[in-house]
Image (cartoon, rainbow, N blue to C red; front, side, top):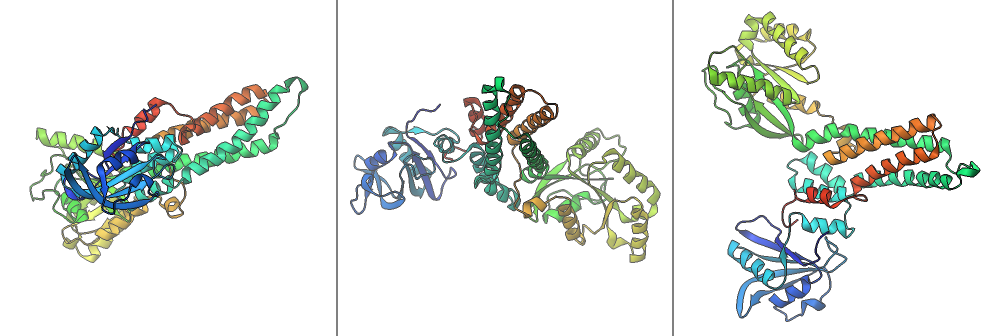
Length: 466
């Protein structure tokens, strides 16, 4: 699907820096490098061993561009499975451009996004799910997403799927064999063992599918909406959580007219906090738009923080209890934390009274002072408790990729069809059709079944140079 021409790209971020790495891959990579590289020791790099580093200069027609370190990786022992050369030069953008242009003149072409990893996949160095994990690893910005990407890149997910596929393929072969002897009415596949295998496959598939709920929020961050009346301290709470002045704070009600978002990593998990406009009746057209957006953000959030001011709660407790009940009933599937703010303005006795009022609602309640930053750690711990990190701690396979999730759902549907067919004593030729389809969806995940359009969509999201 790709031409085999030697490709080149900058492997480090563009822009000036201390060091830049220029990467080549292809059959002619070492030959092209030898035409522009002069070793300080006079060595011919075409005769050097793989995985060696050489000091020298990049030059052409008596013009020297830079002193560099050149790394050799000979096929098949390289990332792409081809000859790979990496040139570590000084990080001047001028030097980077000059060396790349020189290599293009010598016969390279510029790499497409993700083409190095695509070649690794096509050359059998990675399967498709491992290749996709490379992109996830590059984009990981917290401990949890990094851990999941590393586990998938090492082949944890692939090996689990491959094992299931191999066992199913074995039974599929026996059933296909039965079709060749259909006139003799023989059974090569033990139906009892086959039912047990299907039950086990169904169990594993359901576990992987269920893990997507955790994996998806870990990968993309868990959205948390901070809602409540105007001027109860929503923006102050956001600033306290982030430990910076992110949102404008004032005594004027309705200061926040739009939603403000920022991210925070708690216990290795990313959370996206959304400071919303205060919910109230208003004639201000701009504020009304902000309040409308508040309800949209609540719909998108995984967790809702409902913020109240302690003195107002003390004065109108029953009214606020009704409001909490409304939110709880409107969003029954969303974890709700009631946060009573400005507790520095009430006594301990008053605090206990408010706590008793809230106990009947059966929601998690936290008392804090956003201004004084007390109770913030308790809130963070509670947010973390809402995330099911058990699978992560146990190093279980967690699905984060929507394409994998879709293929797993389709594979499960086919496996359930096969189970039903066995129970109903459906003829073997019809059972074989559903088994083949299940095997197809397993193969889609690891890349044993693929097409150019699918690969194009996956690798288009990679950065050039990877």
